[in-house]
Amino acid sequence: MEKLSLNSYNEQNSFLKNNNITVSPFIKWAGGKRALIPAISRFYPFESLKIDTYIEPFVGSGAILFDILNKFTLKNIIINDINAQLISTYKFIQLNPSILIKKLRELKKYFFDLSQTKRSDFYYEIRNIYNKNIENNDFKTADMAASFIFLNKTCYNGLYRVNKKGLFNVPYGSYKNPSIFDEDNIYNISKLLKNVVILNGVYNNTLEFIDENTFVYLDPPYRPLSSSSSFTSYAKGDFNDYDQIELSNFIKMIDNRRAKFILSNSDPKNTDINDNFFDDLYTDFKIYRISAKRSINSDSSKRGFVNELLITNI
Image (tube, rainbow, N blue to C red; front, side):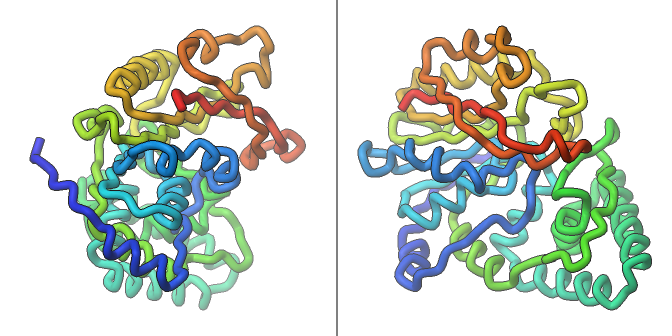
């Protein structure tokens, strides 16, 4: 693996803070943590401990990442995700925001000039092209990054789901006036990401960067509460109980390095009070149950508040 340079971005981050500029996620994401920021941020260790590095191995939409960038100046930040198309989009925002925004403007104009029926046809046309490029392993382009954001903002509920071939298969969302992108937000994110290290791969790729001065937030694919609630295929392959156990071993390695961590996951006790899967798996750490709103379910009557877990050594 190529050795990465972890540069300080203090000056750039200070520029944004001094101008009262904040950023927010540029995509919607099933399981995104924006609503849980008040609960999770209570555990941030930056002010009470000598933490100068933040690592997020499952970055997703980056709600916690952007909250931390808005609030703190740190020496090093490393983000990672196994979803190659997501990470390619992050890198385009980091390095080429103007090119990406130009492509998004073109998609947005064409889309909004169409009738509601034609918009659905256009969505599936873009999805087909997007998947063809994935099949050809040709996804590190501005067109693909723009298509990723466009599909995310116009698909059903911001869900990113793929089939066994790794092809995006979420249907059209039928929104009347979807917000495709925020130009200012993308430019500001680019500034904040200027010296952030962005990795694409399995979560344990980040282990080499973790030491006693590190805070790690982990938001893996959640353990499904039922067979019908599994949305874990956001990359090729599922995240099953064996993977959850492997992740717990990674968590123990983080703890052994004297780093601080927070892990989010579903609470099995929502559906089975006797299911102690995570309570047994993380018996050596603190486990908190917090109320969170579930927004994705094919049955609207089953959308509502459930408990989620925050597991930590803080």
